[in-house]
Amino acid sequence: QEQLVQSGAGVKKPGSSVKVSCKASGDTFNNYGISWVRQAPGQGLEWMGGIIPIFGATNSAEKFQGRVTITADASTTTVYLELSSLRSEDTAVYYCAREARQGARFDPWGQGILVTVSS
Amino acid sequence: DIQMTQSPSTLSSSIGDRVTITCRASQSISSSLAWYQQKPGKAPKLLIYEASNLESGVPSRISGSGSGTEFTLTITSLQPDDFATYYCQQYKSPPYTFGQGTNLEI
Image 1 (cartoon, rainbow over the protein chains, first blue to last red):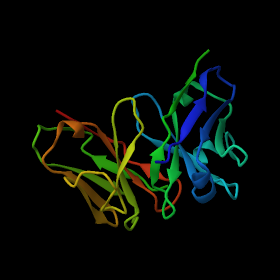
Image 2 (cartoon, chains in turn yellow, orange):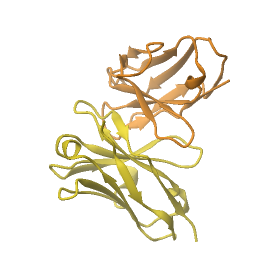
Image 3 (cartoon, rainbow over the protein chains, first blue to last red):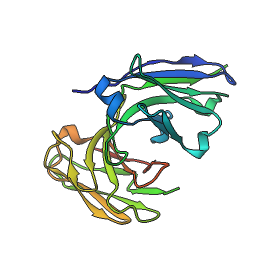
Image 4 (cartoon, rainbow over the protein chains, first blue to last red):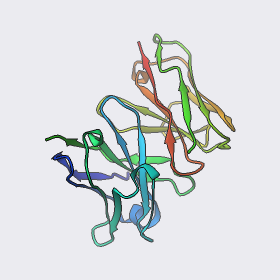
């Protein structure tokens, strides 16, 4: 069964950047899109953006444009999310999730990574 | 952006009950709707896609219906494992948006 394994993050200072990784299998990397969804403490789910790794094509929510960079490394079948100019409101658990081939429903999800923005 | 509105925000029920959660879209999304279950400290789990298709391994007491702008998630004969937070999500067009969640509690 496919698993997405995330790593990275921790505590970051306001104004800095964070990069979170999401390792996928070769099949997922070559045949599916991967999205990033975040969840602030006690809050709901928010889609940030996604990538089709094999093409490198990305899209992102307007709210994050200019601050978010989503990339993919074929040599390690890993997708990355980088968020810059961090502020306290970016404190959240960041999930990666595989998009279905037909329609961006998400399954499976990574385990999530907590990013805390604090001085 | 397409806004997704769930109701109720909180639902108190008992084992064996039948419950229904509603999700409304701000514009038609055809059947491009998914439902997820999330438990504390865990990633969401896909339950339903295309509004009414049950994901493999999800118990048949869970069902979804609707199209256009109004959708429902129904759970019959509630089990202890069903107490969680449920989210709807539209994938008709980006940005893919979620409802605010429904906390199903005992």
